[in-house]
Length: 404
Ligand code: URA
Ligand code: ZN
Image (tube, rainbow, N blue to C red):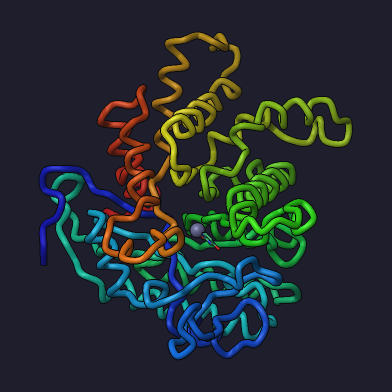
């Protein structure tokens, strides 16, 4: 049993994915997306390569896929290479979205058990700097069978299962819910049970918004769907959830948004204004729209210090809309304090195994996608050591109760 991080605080990756072997086998057995296909490698017809195709009409014939997606030892090696102490691993998109209800329910149960043993058999260490508690290197987020026509009892039973698995600390969900999005009233008991069990809900995109029409005809690889479509999808999903009053009814629900919440922080004042001026919704919510930002958690997967600083200020500002009588908007001391407060809801991540270095031999280097996100935290001017340590790991330890 090792002691890690004696002289520093922990680095925790809360946005890191896997396709467990059982799930990868399912993708290999399919002939339509999502699937893993095998084809001759470009330039050498005798060597086969596996490719991951997760969307219909995916650009560039999908992307190369290999053991880094399913082999736990490779996850641990990646963590060691980048100094990551703990990872909170989640199944990558598109989860169970494409399966019929029976299969989705059975597979959710099996994959949740698989994930528990993936974590339970990972190395243990004593994290002396942050806590004397014995921690695992791996924790995880479970899967729910969120597909059209599934009996809601099956979803609730998956939550019960996850709540009993000690290394599962939440769930990862897409944006479709039961087929009608996350503002579907049928999801009410699901939010209720997730909140009652203190499980974190990681909301992650898959489909993008805009679709092929928005991206034009030029081959831009995956750039437009990933850089724009993904965050816009998250933005739409969380905005609909807020507008449906889910956070008014379940204020203790722990929602964590991928990729720093898409564009919600940037658009939150516009959203507030649109609500105020729209008779259909003006009286619906209990708070100004900006207040809800302060109820959410955001990953720090945005690759730039300016963006992190901005998101933290937008989150921190939320308190102004709860106690508006006490606070003068624009007060600079307050703005500085808000930026620090907002940082408590930002959690570092990598999006591994996506965004590997490209080019021959690049696999041996540290990943730029990881290092940029680390450097971004370090370069946020108004943050001191406390805020940076929080974003790198302390906030994750608290949110996921990793020291418990
Ligand atoms: N990151 C993800 O999580 N999924 C993708 O499909 C691409 C990047
Ligand atoms: Zn991701």
